[in-house]
Image (cartoon, rainbow, N blue to C red; front, side, top):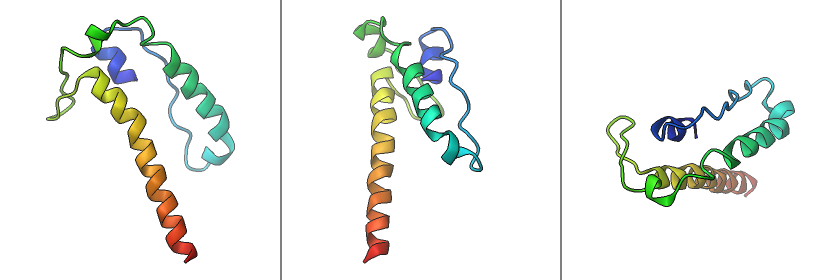
Length: 92
């Protein structure tokens, strides 16, 4: 979201850094609430045409903003699937 706001010249969403591995378990719920709050607003008034026509290049890969949003949503879902599969394999 920070990258997308930079590309669209929007205000920094002020997303806090991820808690450290030592505190993540205790801070996870609060941090997830913070992320949801920070992700809800920045793009709400951005028209669709600003999300699609221009490509942005972080490194060598080129993205539209809507493609980056899709990636941001699907990436953790994929990891959740992988983790569930690994846990199931450990049980059997």
